[in-house]
Length: 131
Image 1 (cartoon, rainbow, N blue to C red):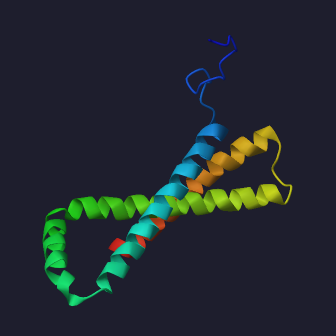
Image 2 (image 1 turned 30 degrees about the horizontal axis):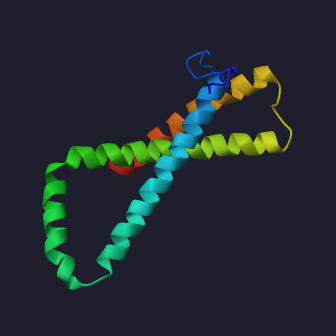
């Protein structure tokens, strides 16, 4: 028996807005950073088990030596995600204090947050790779 109820709106119906896009990217960057952290902790735990994993480590690091560009890209992506997540978190803390809640200020703070996140990531990238 089919019930004739209206379907809830899907994401394809709505026009993407800056606020919804930044919210979705905040969640994605948080999940990405959490998975990077869990993977790092898993690798550290594996390294603590015993020396019988030495051959496994040797094989993995030899493969990763050929994928150096991939690791650099992953590190840069994690750095950008961290800067974005932190900048957007500060923006949310400002909202929690009751400031910048007008729609025009929300859009202005969103653009300012994106600029700050990119500049912070660029500064950290230059500091890490150049100096």
